[in-house]
Image (cartoon, rainbow, N blue to C red; front, side, top):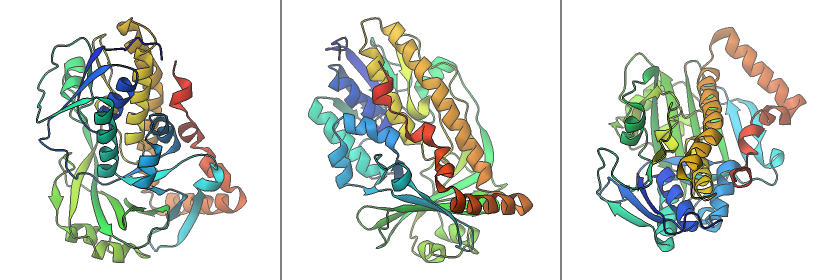
Length: 375
C-alpha cells in the first residue's frame, strides 16, 4: 500500500457483492468510502454461489476467510450426469487443485460477511438511496448490476438479446451435505445443484424455450412449471424438485462486455461492466477480482485517470474471455443427438484415461491470483 488512497472520498453505487467487496478493498487502503444502496434493507435474496480459488484469494487477503468458512461448505468435486442420473464423469477439484479453496455459499451469507466487515472497517452504507444518474464526486464506482445506470452514463443505451433460455432457481432443505456439485445435462436443458451450509441445497435449472422471459431474477414462478420441464430427469432430481416450495424464473440474455469502463472519474465493475451467463459460475468471482484490481490500481499513485485506465486494461481481456467461455458452455450442456452422444463418450473416456486433463482446461480461471497479479 502506498497511501495514495488515504482519506480520498469514494462513492460506490450498489451494495451487492461487487460494491461491498470494492468498498472493503478501498477502505483497507485508506479511502473514505460511502456505499449507496437502493434497497431499504439488506434482505435475504438470491441463492447459492460457487466461490472458486481465484475469488477466494482476494477474500482471504481481505481477512474474510474464516468468516466465509463458517458460513459455507468446501467444494470438492463436480459430477457431470446425463438425464437418467448416470454419471458421465467426475471432476475431482480437491485432487487437481490440492492447495486451492473452493467454497459453496448462499449469496445472503456472503453479503452478511461483507456488510459486517465493511462497517467494522468504517465504510458508510446508506440504504434506500436510488441513484438515477452519476452523482458528483471525485471518484464514483458503479457496482449497480445488470441494469446499471452508471454503465449507461458511460456507454449510452444498449440492447441485449434473449438467448432463448430461461432459468429457475430454488433453495430446498436437504440433509445431504456431500460437498460436490451435480450437473445433469439433457437435450436443450440442464440442472445444477449443490449443497449449502445449514442443511440447504441450491438448484438452478435452465431450459431452452420459445417463451420470452423477463431478465428480472426476482420474479416468482409456480414450482409445477419447473417440475414439468424436468419431469423425465432421474437420479435425485425428482426428489429435489418435489421439495421445491417456491422458485423464481428469469430469462437469460446475452450482453456485450462494456465498451467503456471508466472516464477518469467514474468506473464500473462486476455485472455493470461484464454481465455473464451463469454457465461458468464466475459472475460473483469476476466481481471480487475486479474489486481488488480496482483498489490496487488506485493505490499505485495520485494520478486517478492513469490508475482507472490501468484497471480497465487489466480486467477487460480476462472478463471477456470468461464471458465467452460461459457462452460456449451454454451450448455444450444442451447438446442433442449424435453430438451429445459423441461428447458424453469423450468425457467418459477422458475421465478414465486422463482425469486431470478435463479440469486443466480451467486452470487459467482457477489458478489466477488477482492479489499477486496487480501492482
